[in-house]
Length: 339
Image (cartoon, rainbow, N blue to C red; front, side, top):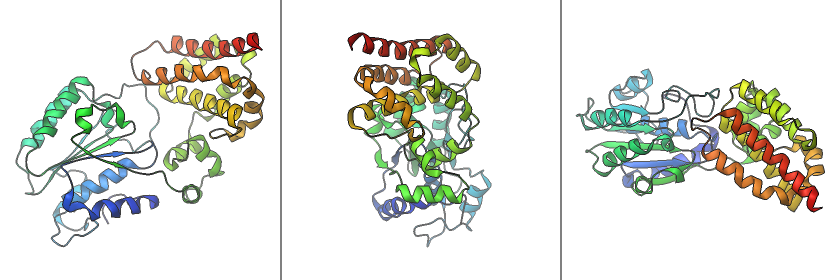
């Protein structure tokens, strides 16, 4: 065994992929929801490519020179291309940071130098790009050139939470391989083994992704989310300026906070239109009470989507939160006026 093992729900996808290695392209794009273990899957695949055992089948052998180099974390033919604050993080398990998660053009140029050098071990040269959608425009165009004319033996494993944000020209040069969400019962069982109390609730909070649910169970920001949801549950008394100031002071990742709002509004609209609740079963009473005004929040959900796309841009956070909360309150006021 070498490195971290695959998660239990990944074995089927692994066997399917490895069975087709004779047709493996030079660039693979792993997609799927945040929190399903794409990073670990990519690292396992990189280890498989770099294993030098002549008889390897579906697993890296763990004992050859290539495996020992990889396990030590200094294989000369392996690189991870990631934002500075992502490179050493476990997938989706890191504390949110305010740094902009961007891979720049200088990083890609350094990678090109690595890719075009002769291999040290005489085998593959493997690069993991994580998350691939963090390539900025200049970096993406520079990386495209490397993908278009890869040297012999170069293998690229791109990992993307939001793969449609990648340049179409990059996507077209990769084989897209989606990693599915695990079975709900299996995910809950795994979380229970990890010591999570009430795994069903945390899976609901994260849409079924087990690693994200594990984070949810142990996050330091749980009291802040509870506070925000409490304010959202009473829009008539929501103090926009105070809540926005509280959120800015927390220094939480903007995308995380906007995600709370998106899930709240999704549930509110869903309960109102179909009676179904997905993310916040612990707020069922509050959501049901507000759901009579659900139709007026459909438009607001589009506002949240636009805000999420800009979440990692350098913005005045207090103004962002004030604007989003004001729009939320305004949606209820319009609803009352029409009713």
